[in-house]
Length: 324
Ligand SMILES: [Zn+2]
Image 1 (cartoon, rainbow, N blue to C red):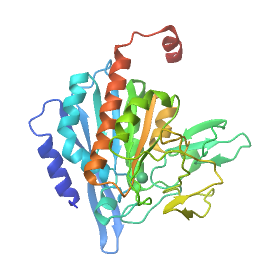
Image 2 (tube, protein in one colour; image 1 turned 60 degrees about the vertical axis):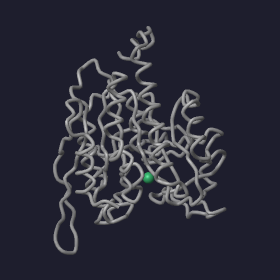
Image 3 (cartoon, rainbow, N blue to C red; image 1 turned 90 degrees about the vertical axis):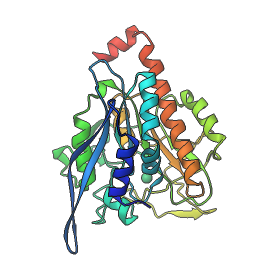
Image 4 (cartoon, rainbow, N blue to C red; image 1 turned 45 degrees about the horizontal axis):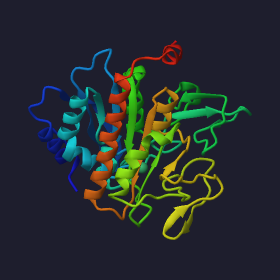
């Protein structure tokens, strides 16, 4: 496994000489350790230029530090990804490794072990009809209002890397964002599978899922609770057939391997902000890195295609109303 500095060096090499993509350093992530503090420079890769009429796709990987597949895919294929986006006229904002200290430590959370109040993929708070506040609705889309989890009214504790991403996301004009892709990797399921989280009309992804099924078995009709080990709603996991499953929340994948879960994650936030295509990709531990690369790239290219097709579509009356 590369160190973070080796990761950044490889990423820079992959993107060297380009005028259409720029690696931006976004400040220092500082963590306390037994020996004092350790600093990591946060980075994002952005298309150059991004104009007011451009459509943007946000790609994020590595928020869970031990889920290395996504960062490695982006490290190796960033150049090809920016080539494809340019060909299709879509701009990118890429957060290639969101939790560098966890990446180096091989841990889900950062080197402090800080899981915040609701994990590190924590972006939304829901006010329920009874007035209670929740960070995860399961698959039931029922609430009164939603807020950013960093809204000061909640006083929520967010890990360092999560606070940074909140600040970065607030700089992005979300009215221009056509898709958000959040690349994870399921280390809880040892058999080889691909599955995904999405919102809204999932039938648009059928061609993407068909392509993925040629690379990895789709985890269809399965109860999955991998990684959801936080928060007041947590119910101890049940291991069945090598998988961590949970029955009580009625969270189950459909025949295409999609789970709908309003879990306060980055794609859930994006969906609340009006982003039509908001996807979390999961590849399980039983797949090789090459297979994970292929699955991740099918999603990247597939979403670029969807957003490119959408931006060519003339605005309809309903779009204009929705923008008001
Ligand atoms: Zn994850």
